[in-house]
Image 1 (cartoon, rainbow, N blue to C red):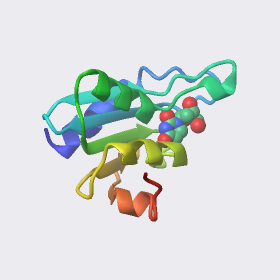
Image 2 (image 1 turned 30 degrees about the vertical axis):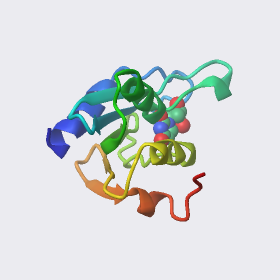
Image 3 (image 1 turned 135 degrees about the horizontal axis):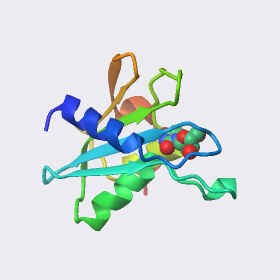
Image 4 (image 1 turned 120 degrees about the vertical axis):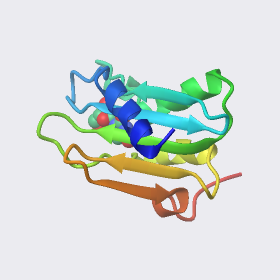
Length: 130
Ligand code: THU
């Protein structure tokens, strides 16, 4: 599974996003330590705080399938004419952190094709853990 293939999986699931309130479609794809891929998209709700992020959905799918660690997570986000890459929100950085290690990579790509790779330390320095 290449980074490009994982980004493609994130782009494909982004099409399934349920986001009538923000119109901001996000897809996430995780490659776990077993080489399995798990995807998720954002699912909004009329009671706004009940909505969930794409990364949270992909993490739930990984855990339900028996995956333990995030090797790479790819995030594709944005709606029509929103080409800026979608980096994980603050809450999702903490969610990803729970299942990451120093080698975990977070990759984001915008609709113009520009992509960036981050580590957990880049996105969540001095992070909280028990
Ligand atoms: N969203 C995600 O799915 N992941 C993020 O990391 C950032 C935000 C979603 C939540 C909401 O449905 C929409 O994008 C706009 O904030």
